[in-house]
Image (cartoon, rainbow, N blue to C red; front, top):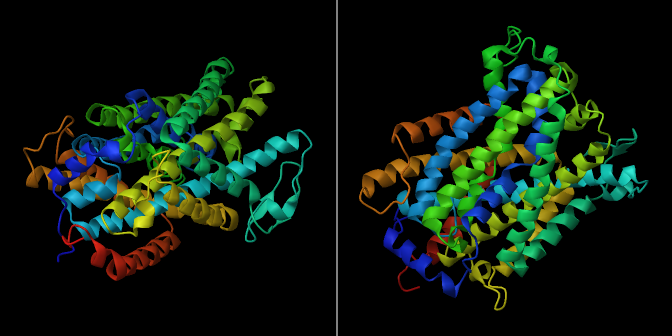
Length: 483
C-alpha cells in the first residue's frame, strides 16, 4: 500500500465514459465560458482595482492586471491540458492523482476547500454588505445583530457603526439558496449563472462605454507614478505589487475544470472554457481600470471600499449607482454558485475514490446531483460566512488557490515525462517554460501574503493529513482492491 501510487489514466477515462450513470453531461462550451466568467468577475473588479491604484500602481494598474493575467495564463494553460486529457470532475485533485500520487492528490483536494468553500463564504460576506447598501437606499434596515459576525466592525453608508453582531444572516441566506439550487440540477444552475453573467458584463460594458467620454486625461499623468523609495509603492515595483493585489480578481477560472464530467465535449470545451473566460475577463478588467482611473485621480481611491461607485458618480448617470450595486450582487451570486458547485464536485470525486465517506458521492435519484455534499457545504460554508470576518477568509482563499496552481503546473511536467504519448486534444505550449513560469509567479505571490496566512495553511493541512491517515489511506479504492 503506497501513498504515492498514481491513478492510471485509463481508469480515469473509464470513469468519464460512465458518466451517464452519475453526473449528467449538459454543459456546452458557451456555458463553460460563462461559468468561468461567472467565477472570475466579482469582488476583484469592483473593489481591488481602486486599492491597487491608490497604494501601488496609480493609473498603471492596467499593467498590473495584464501582469497578473499572464501569471494566471501560465497556470490556465496547464489546467487546459489536464482538463482535455482527464475530463473527470475533481479539477486539480484529479490531475494530481494521475501524476503525483494519492497523498499529493489528497493534499490538493483538501487544499481546494480553502479556494472553493471559503471562497464562497468570503463572497457571501461581501454580498451581504452590498445587499445592505441596496436596502438602505429604499429605507429598509435590518437588525444590527444579524448583519455581521461577532468579531467585525461594520460601517454602514449612513455613517452608523456596528460593533460586532451575532451572525451574518444575509450571507447565510444566499449560501443556502444557491446550495439548494445546485441540488436541483447543474443545467438549472448553469441557466441562472448565464443570466447573471449577462447582467454583470452588461453593466461593466455600459460603464466603460458611458464613462469613456468623461475621462480626464490629466488623471493619467504621470501614468507610472515615481517610486517613493519603498518597494511596491509605485514605479515598476508598484506595478508588480499591484499585480499581487489584483491577482485575486482572477481567482475562479480554474473552477471550469471541476465541471469536466458534466461537459458535452470536454476535450474541446475545457480549453475553450478556461482560456476563453480568462481572455474575456482580462480585456474587461483592463478597460474598466483604464476608465475608472481616468474618471477619478488614483489618489482619491485611498481607503475607498467602493471605488467603482466613486467613479460612477463622475459620469453624471445617477441611475447607474443603483445599477452598480445590482450588478455587483449579480456578480457575487454567480461567483458563489460556481464556487459551491466546484467544491461539491471535488468532494464527490474524492468520495468515489474512497478517500472520503460514501456520503459525499451519493447522487440524488431524480436530479442526478451530489445532493448530500451540497447540503454538507450549505452548513459548512454558512458557518464561516455567518461568523468569520471577511479579511481572515480572503487570505486563506488566496494562499490555497496559489498552492493549487503550483501543483497543477508541476503536474503537467510530470505527465509529459511519464506519459508523453497520451492523447491530448490541447497541449500546453513551450513546456517546461510555461509551467515553470507559472510556478515562479505563484510562489512569489504566496510569499507576499501575510504570515498569518501561512500559519493557517499549515494548521489546515495538518488537519487534512491526519484525516487522510486515519480514514483516507485505509479506505482508498486504489490501494485496497478488495474495496
